[in-house]
Image (tube, rainbow, N blue to C red; front, side):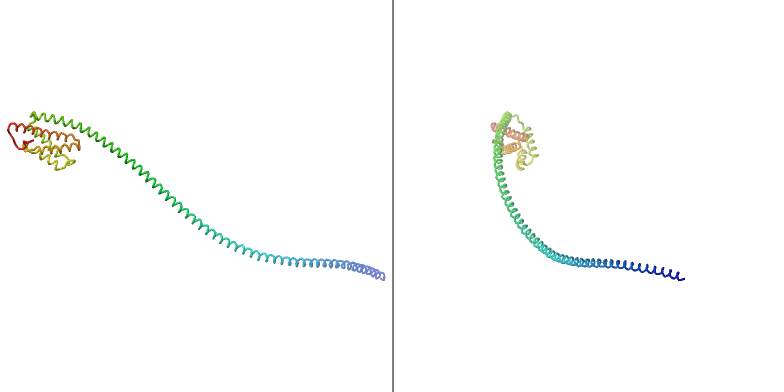
Length: 288
C-alpha cells in the first residue's frame, strides 16, 4: 500500500517535476516569445514611427507641393491673365493695324483707280482725237475721191451727153431733113396730119405729169385738137420745145416719135401755107 503511494507520489513528483520543468521551459519560451513580440512591437512601433514620420514628411511634402501648386496656379493664372491681356492688346493692335492697313489699302486703291480712270480718260480722249483725225482724214480723202469720181462722172456724162447729142443731132437733122423734103414735095395730106395729131393727143393723154407739167400736156392736147387752119406756128414751136425737153429728160422712143409728128405737122403746114401765099391765097396763121 505504501509502495503504491510511494510509486504514486514518485510518479506524481515526476509529473509535477515534468510539469514544473515544462512550465519553466514554457515560461522561458513564452518569455522569449514575449521578448520577440516586444521586439516585434518595438519594430512595429519603430516602423509606425517611421511611417508616421514618413507620413508627416509626405504631408509636409504634399503641403509644399500644394503650396507650390497653389503658387504655380496663381502664377499661371497671373501669367494666363497677362497672356490674355497681351492677346487682347495684340488683337486690338492687330485690328487697329488691319484697320489702318485697310484704310491705307482702300486709299491706295482709290488713288490707283482714280489714276487709272484718269489715264483711261486721257487714253480714251487721245484715241477719240486720233480716231477723229483719222476719220477726218479718211472723210477728206473719200470726199476727194468722191469729188474726183463726180468730176469723172460729170466728164463721162458730159462726154456721153455730147456723144448722145451728136447722135441725136444727126438723127434729128436726118429725120427733119426727110420730113422737110417730103413736106416740100407736098406729100403730107390732111388725113396724115389728122393721124399725127391723134397720135400726139394719145401720147399726151396717157403720159404722167413728170417731167412735163399737167398744163403742158393739156396745152399739147389742146393745140393738136384744133383744125389745121387754127394752129399757129407759135403754138407749134412751143409744143416742139415741150416735146424736145420731154425727150431729153426721158429718152423715150414714143416721145421722139411725137416730136417728129409735131415737126411733120409744122413742116407740112408751113410749106402748104407758103404755097398758098405764093398763089395769092391766105388764111389765119399763114405767117411762118
